[in-house]
Length: 237
Image (cartoon, rainbow, N blue to C red; front, side, top):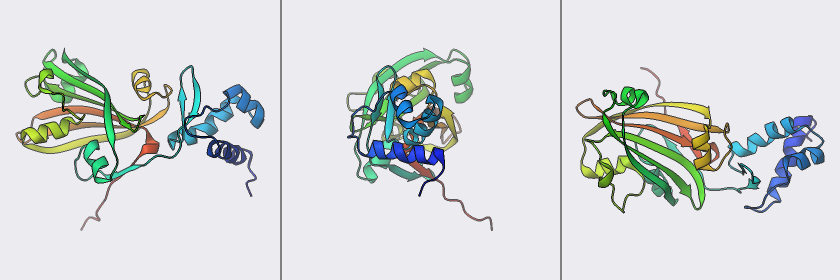
């Protein structure tokens, strides 16, 4: 039996979410807080657990909607592969939307990430990956224009810059990634249809050419409830 007030609140919210059909909107925060007998701040803290699991999603100005349970992409990070390859291997279907390909000069961050001079011509590829109609990841790749020009991505581009480079025969060597949990910045939150400040899993990666150059500097933002990443670690002999 649940005895602690916060646990009881989460249990009550879980019951409400479970009996609400996917796509339906939950009562407003003031109404839910009144019904549950808690402050709005306590209610938001309890609801964040269900957001991280991907069971509910808040939309600015529209309310909180039940998402329902969805397939989870679970993969190890020891082998470099694209999100599309992961999904295909697991029998899931993902699609790309909101594709933006732009040419721009290198700013301080991208110049440092790619190891090039400020103002170097770059190509940036931004897109949202969806499972069915739901946004699950926001991906941004930045490359030197001499490596990839905007017009080289044809109509058959499925969203993976990595797969594009591999298909082209680029001799890729290794990828280094920094992994962290972040609060969603406004542009990313808008792309993923979540609230600014919601928790996301971020991977910032450098993909290296066989000659040692950084070929692709990328950032990937994942809604945690849709992804389980793991790393196999060996005991030092």
